[in-house]
Length: 409
Image (cartoon, rainbow, N blue to C red; front, side, top):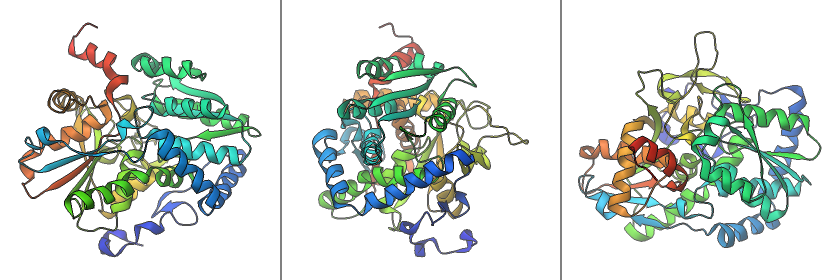
């Protein structure tokens, strides 16, 4: 199918992925033979869970009473005045228990793991928010928790590392490669293959082999479901724009998914531009990458002419990944979502502005989304309504940011 020649308004986005886990040509399941039975078992169990009243009831209970959902939709009035008068709403998933959107997916996957009889959980983390959320839910359900984290990220995300240890998680430092998120994911996958009987791998983003991109998106879609109801209540109409940062892409898909069939809603994903997309230090895989294979799926990647993965760079540990979830690759190619970037410097500036004007200290990840809005303020009008996913709070980043700003703590 030549998606670019189709009228994207007529595509029913809710039917994807297909039975093979494909979003157009992206996605799929490209793994070693030893992993295939595990993935097929997870897929089968997830199909049952989606149709299970008991599973859905448990998920709803923990979403409401443990995570604290629904998260508020907040009109950021002082920042709105910086956007040419457009109304900027924050979907405040940073107010979730553990301080980010990640716990939505962790509760879902760990309930699934227990349904499968698994007692040992492994996960990868970059910014530490997924690791923290996984450790938290494992503590809740008395499960053994092993978190793989690159040595570089362990240093720049010290607050979350301490919290994970406090919750009883075992932190496995990863020294290979650049010792960041990609390398942590490699090691977590190796662990899973070696411990197939009792272990479940909780992937933190909408990437990896099928069914993970679909599962993570589905568990995170509560964000957009809530946001749609809230904006219709407050404004009596849908927003003109949705904006979210993009690393692997789970927070963005969480917001976007409920609106994909609403053709009047413009959707924008903001990648990490690092020191500039024309430099060699960025994580903008959609802007500067090309399709290839990584972590069991076919998607856009930063890679050289020989297909070797290039290093990614971002001031934000959560966006420091050389790939993107396959659904984002598809949405880019068919033109439903516009993908842009913001630099480290722009994100830092947005971080400071949000803190001073709204009394909300954002994580560096959503600071990229806000940076794009501020940079393009003159493109908006007083008639525009914008929803931005405030997907994480900045507690975890204060030490690394203080170093960048030359502030002694």
